[in-house]
Image (tube, rainbow, N blue to C red; front, top):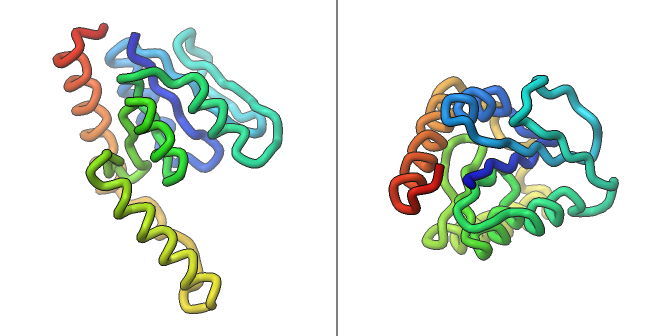
Length: 153
């Protein structure tokens, strides 16, 4: 059965995930290093993992199955999940795919080096309304595609 995993610690689109998952009656597991409030719904589970480097990422990779969906902004986690045949969507709605992950990893490494050299400061820009809209559309599209291709309910 199709399942949505959310790398939840800094995920800004959790309400959007809940809304779409509810529409399709899908299970959602939020994976985090610390407790957080989640809707009191049977299909939504909070998995609090030990506070270790990449503990949440490791948990997701261990439990994700082919055709599950992972929501994350973490590029290395996205790459690991793609290797397990999961679908991965960034929090701005941009999909991570086998075709673009190499370029994304290379860009991440370059930007990290520039930040280390003091050339770039600050983090990513705040999420905009159009990012949320793109995320909702992408999540809906991915669910429908998986269901059509694999007849998963």
